[in-house]
Structures are given as C-alpha cells and as structure tokens.
Length: 196
Image 1 (cartoon, one colour):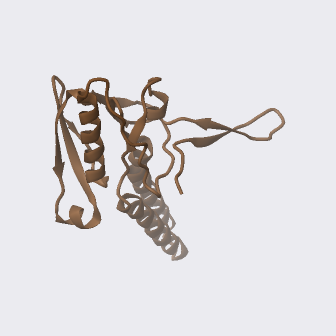
Image 2 (tube, helix red, strand yellow):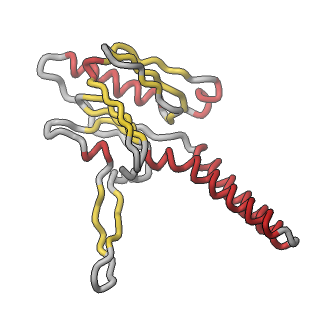
C-alpha cells in the first residue's frame, strides 16, 4: 500500500466541526509544471524506534520515581524523555529528500527552512559511505558533488543505493537531448507523510 505525500490538517470552523484540508510537502509544492518526483528518500527504521524507546523508558522511570516519593526526579525524567523524543523525531518530521526528473532537493527545518537543490545535469559524483552495520541494515550516507556548488552531505538514510540509482538515472536522463522517461515515484511501504 502506498501512502501519498499529503497530510491532513484539521481546520476549525464556526460551528466547531473540523474540516480536513490537504497540505503538500515542500518537494511536491515546489515542483515545476513539467517536473515529476521520481524518488523520495526516507530515514532508517531505527531512528523512530530509538526515540520511542527513550520516551517509553523515561516515562516508566519517571512513573516509578514519582510512585516512590521522588516527584521532582520523576518529572525530570519525564521531561528528559520528551525532550529526547522531540530531538530525534523533529528532524525526521521536517526533513525531505527527493529526486525529480530535473533536480535533487534536500529540505530541512520547519520554522526556519534551509534547502539545498542541485540540477541533475550539474552533479559530478555521488559517493556512498556505508559501514558494515549499514550494509547489514540497509542504511548509509551519500555525498553529492556538483559543478560550482558546495558538496551536499546527507544524513544516514535507508536504502542509499536506491537513492543513488535514482540520481544516476536522473543524471543520465538529463544528459540526453530532450531527456528520456524516468520511472515513477518509488516510495517506501512504511513511509509517513512529511510536513513542510
């Protein structure tokens, strides 16, 4: 089952009944008329797993501390767990990485947005860094080098070879006069909606 890149935002109305409006991700919002998304990057499964484990562990620890008369210590554990959860999950929620048939897009941030975009025809090399654990669990980092721009070092991503293949396919298409057809969007089965 594929999920769309849209998220539902409930907007209150005068009668108190919520109305659902779709919001587009930054990448989908910035597509030109002739541009198509061919690949969307995603983070490895263990980032949210670690965040949830920390949150649950700190809540349980805080509850035990509170039940044993250490109220302030329990509250501190609860707040530390919430802060840890948000510190890990906020970048996952606010980062988008995508390849279109014309460019590479890397967006970070929500209130303060920072983007790095690179035309596919300007990419000179795509380097992969994948340690042993990365090979076992299918994650790694890519570094993009382009003509006349700073290098773009991406965070650890799931399926880095898929992203590299999409970049190489797009680079080959951009090098052809008139371009060639590139495959449709590849989405990870458990991809969640991104908020721009």
